[in-house]
Image (cartoon, rainbow over all chains, first blue to last red; front, side):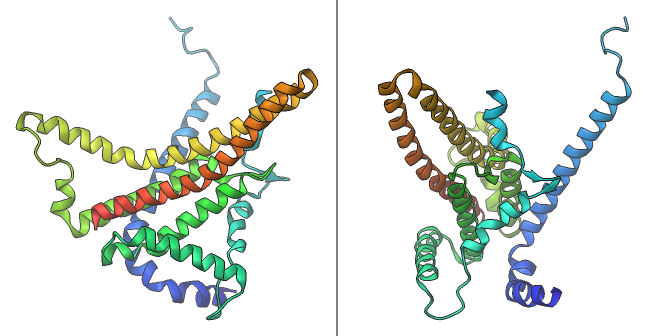
Length: 60
Length: 226
């Protein structure tokens, strides 16, 4: 199956993936970085909300 | 009512498995790859359409820009087919999800901008200051141009999401209204039904237009940068 994938997609599209789309790969790296940041912020806020069930304004 | 309205925008899962992947991959089988010189009717018709779009879209680009033809044509085919398939009743449209549209917009926009900075650095930086601005306005205008540059991927994604989502929501609402009105007052229901038909025609147009606009803007950003 891997050989079919290589024969059908990688070999005909090799110049695209290696030369033309270089900047798009960088853009995809940027996008994955943004996704990572959003997910980690979400996880952090969920963990914070879960670990401190007391209301935030009742401490004064 | 609220639950019903937005239920069609939930990412579909079948017994815990994300079938969204199958839904995104589905339009692929509607475009068979041509493997002869003269193909059957469906493939010939698609080839003719693709050539029409290709010529219209890629004429303005230079050699470097035309290396992106495959990407741009794939983009418009995907968005167009996904939007049109979403007009079927009870179907799920992946392009209603902001996550997917951002996933399409950010790499393509970043690719175009980085191409510009890499190959024509001075010209790319010069885009931040339009020609003929009075000197006192220069700092503010550079800030404004920077903001407008970084808003481009957001605008691309949100435009597509909002248009398709709004269209689907309107059809839900007006369809629901038509259904309820049939038992109350039939002439009003007829009018609402005509509105629904017109809206459906509009949605067909919007599906195609939004695909075109998305791709055109990406190609414009590319043109600025090659």
